[in-house]
Structure formats: structure tokens, C-alpha cells
Amino acid sequence: MHQIVSNPVDSSRRWWVLATVAAAQFMFGVDAFIVNVAIPTIAVELHASAAQIEAVIAVYLIAYGTLVVTGGRLGDIYGTKAVFIAGVFGFTIASLWCGLAQSGTELIVARLAQGATAALMVPQVLATLHLLFADASRGRAFGIYGIVLGVAGAAGFVLGGLLVTLDLAGLGWRTVFFVNVPFGIIIVSAAWKIMPTVPHRARTRLDIPGAIVLFLGLLCLLGPLLFGHDVQWSAWVWLVMAAGVAIIAGFVRLERMVARRGGMPLIDLALLSDHAFMRGLVAVFFFFFANLSFYLVVTIFMQKGLRIPPLQGGLVFLPLALVFIVGSRHSGARAKHRGTLVLIEGCVALLGGLAALALTVALVAEPSALLLAIVLMLFGYGQGLVMAPLSSAVLSTVKPSSAGAGSGMYGTTAQIGNASGVAAIGAVFFAIEAAAGSARVALYTACALFGLSIMICAAFLTWMRRAT
Image (cartoon, rainbow, N blue to C red; front, side):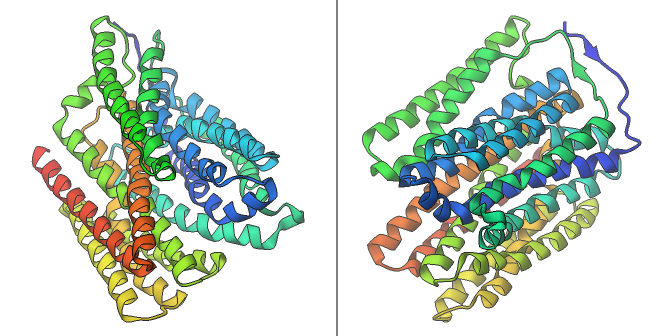
């Protein structure tokens, strides 16, 4: 039997704690987008190859996606406060390293460290909210969390373009990484002072074999998805992905063996039998499949198809971010009366936004940045309706003692969805653009794939409602 430390959680300053962990989530979200704008400058200054430039973006995603479950479980074992502070501190140091990198290879390694430390930091955000807001304020707290998620993406695009354009102190692209350092120090200081010590499991050790097997399995699945197009999807790519599936299957068997021996598996096996939670994770996958990939495709279309400059293209997403906030606030209020049905309504709004974008591009020969900004607002509102309450709805059946494990599984699923969408829809977009010689046709196809993914998400959300 494992000893459970049952110290009461101090929630007297929980809204300040929310601000602290939300700031860390914002920093992580911005960093996922900000680098895209600076990539051309980085390539020139570091004499980086095309493969190295892709790796700068990809390894951050891979490291985070493959280690986030481990980060969630570490929070269960050692406490969310200690692991959160360690994660933010590590992320800050890794950001400084990225800004000081002198070669493409060094920057790749530093980005790997960034993703790995983010995997320690981010699961503690959801776990902390899950533990501190178990009352009527839960919807409001998770609504704020959802707003942070949406604003971070748009802020990343705009801030990246602004910092590169300003070229502060002649540092150029390096400022997109250096900007994390002062904010990281502030977050660590605040967390140290006000973040409560929450219940954790004592006298246990991390399931190291499980962590290694999961890392290798997800790496085999994510790596080929991200880099497959570079090697024309040759046979070995599919073999590696098949090996990844086999390793993941072996991971589940390994975890059951650890549980039978009285150990503490990396994932809470009880969660696998929670039908509502598992259906919710499928919905999460398909929602995020159409999330990061949407911004990637639209950004590429604006730059290549419409010749809109990076900074102006980044500003296109500002109105989307504003209506995302409005949608997040509306979803929090509506969720009290309509429950998870608000998620379905959000999916309908997303589909409407995709249709509006495709129709605008079809009818207007050269849509301006302003017109695109207005059209994208409906999509942003739909994202706000879904993203804000999604994590709360999916984690609602998870016990507090498994909050870290559940949020880690949620984060991994979301990141795998993001990576898969970027790889799959991105590959289709580039292939059709090359074959048809038209970015418009490629955009139409991508919008159709986004729409299909959102419809599958809505179907599983409906199924999840029936299991609760």
C-alpha cells in the first residue's frame, strides 16, 4: 500500500495561484508559435539547413508530447508545486540557451530541452486547477485557462513578428527566446511564495521503464509524421510507425505488470476503464488535429498565396484572439445550464468559420489582411466555445489523486493531435499545392479535412455525454 499524504490544500490565494500557473501556460503557448515567424532569420544567421530548421520546430513538439505524461506522474509523486517550479526554472534556462545558440545543431538540442522542461511545467497547471477549483468557481477558472490558451497562440504570431522587426539591441531573432527569461524568473518567485503544497503520493518512485518505453513509442509515431514528407514517405517511415504502435501496445502490458507487482504505473490504469474520459480523449485528439495545423496552413497561404508580410499576417489573428476570449466567457456561462452541449455548439461555429473562409477565398481574388481577419473571427469564437470548457469536461470524472496523471494524458493526447494534424494536413496541403499549382485549391482541401476532424470531435463529445 502506498501512503497518501493528505495535507489540506490551502486555497485562500487560489486566484493568485491561477494567475501564476496561467502565466506559465501562456509562456509555453507563445513559444509554440513565436518561433515560426523568426525561422527565416534564424536559417540565414546560423547557416542552418532546411532539415535543421524543421527540427527546430519539431523537436520542441516531440519532446513535450512524449514526456508530458511523465511530467504529470512526477507531479503526483513529488507534488505539483515542486515539479511546477522545477519545470518553469528549467524552461527559463533552456530559453536562455536557445537565444545564445551558435549553430543549428545547438539550437535543436536547446529546443529539445525546452520541450522536455515544458513537459514538467504544463501538466501541473491543469492539475492545480483541478485540485483548487472543485466548487462553483470551476467553470470560471477553466474558462480563464481556455482564454490563455487562445490568446497565447495569436500573441506568439504577433510578438514574434514584432520582435524580429524591432531587432532590439541588434539581437534579432534571439529576443524571441530571451523574452522568456524575465517572465520565467517572476513566475518561479511567485509560485515559490503562494503556490500551495498539495496532496501527493509518498514512498514511491517513477516508473522509469514505463517512461522510456512510452518515450520511444511516441517518438516512433510522431517522428515519421513530422519528417515523413522529407523522405517522400518511403517504406521505412511506415515500418517505424508500425514499430511505434507495437511499442505502445507493449507499454500498456508493461504498465499492467507494474500494477500487479504493487508498483505505481506511469499512467493510472483505472483511467483506461473510464469510458467518458477515454471518449473525451478521442474528441481532444480530433479537436487539436485541426488546431495548430489550421494556423500553420492559413499562415502559409497568406505568405505564399497572398504575399502578406509576416508581421501583417500575424496581426490577422488578433481579432480571432479577441473573439476567442468572448467565446470562452460565453462557454463558461452557458456550460452551467447546458453542460457539455456547449462544446457541440462550438463545433458548429467552427464548421461555419471554415466554410466562411473557403467561400471568401473562392469569391475574392485577392482578399486583404483586414478581410481575412474579419472572416476568421467566427472560427475564433467557435474555438473559444470548445477549448475553454474542454479540459474541464474531459477531466470531470478523474479523481483528485489522479489529477496529474489525467492531465498528463490530456496534454499528450492534445500534443499528438497537434503533431499529427501539422504533419498530415500540412503534407496534403503542400502536395496539392505542388500538383495543382494553386495555394487556393490546397486551402480548400485543408478546410475540408479540418471540417471532417471537427465533425468527428463533435461525434465523440456527444458519445462522451451519454457516458456521464
